[in-house]
Length: 513
Image 1: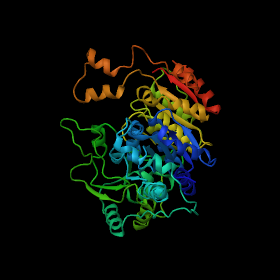
Image 2 (image 1 turned 180 degrees about the horizontal axis):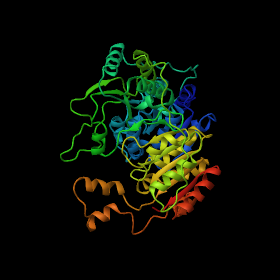
Image 3 (image 1 turned 90 degrees about the vertical axis):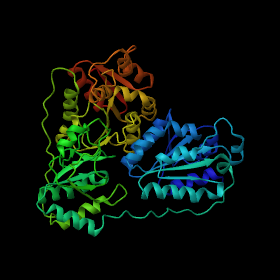
């Protein structure tokens, strides 16, 4: 047994049985060890940003971490943008980053870098195995941190620690500290605010947006008159039969207006909302200046338990929540547009689907349709670093092979990690990818207008338009092994969507909006 074998065994005994990988020379002993472990599913990504986003999507749906395998500092650096998104999603993940043998580092070989410093901004825990004997301890620490602190752990694996001799030993799952609900004092303060006659908003995030937690939030809202809003989170339960929650709008002016009436904000799962960016003359904090803020825990807290206790404190256990009702959406006609596409998807959404969403500007209206759709889980872009959608759908599909995954994908951000289509094909994942092909970075055009620029000159258009040449998503998809079709009318789109939803395996629709 070598250190790499021990690493695999510790991961497996703790339930980590999926590895999203893009290995290199320094990791060959770990690759060989993985090859000796048929219990471990290894999924290749052709770019490290695919690997890290897939691990994010997997953990959001599986409720446990996957491992990644990344090649030295540059490989980790390639995956950092989607590790940023995972950090904002509070996703448990264990990165295994290979490094040179410890004695080789002093010679500053071409791939030598400061991996610890690269990892630290996106990781809640960073550790390094010094030798094969330390691998069990370091791997267990990485797992405990990922689960208990709800975040990314990055373990650095020198080549000689991987190939060094390790002693066989009996392994058992490591104990993870249980999450704690908000304190009794904090819950009492929130209960007084809810029953004190003031206008109160519950701002929900993290696990507070899961179906069972929403039941308690819905009872509190009915009993006290509080409003329910959500902040962008890793996963939320939506659709008919579930308590609907309004998202805090992305545009700062709309967000400020939506929350302007509230005197007390009770934040559950995340702190108070802030503007995505700063704009001249506009506030950074969304809530009114006079609004009191009560914090009832972050993503690592027991948010379900907090809501259950708060429900009891306000006497709402007997209240009946208001649920979303399945709507009879009209078959869309007319122009192919984000609105008609949204109606077509809402009308055909399968029960228990997973909706991955990197539609950016094109899909913002879909949230209004969500309460009338079939019950589904929504996985959005959490950290604003575009290029997550395609590999996020990969991870979700690996975690839940019995559920249909629908990806709403903007064309510009889709190109960041387009290699994920190849992984969809190789793993035969049941993903329907809908490309909103507006051939522009439309969100950046909107941001230009937000800073007062309404006329775009030659240089601005050169940076914001996706033309000369125009992207052909059908050819791109087929080149990656994914069946694809193009829609120029809503009738063509609905026919393609019907075919995609009836089939099993990856299918891409290029919607020419």
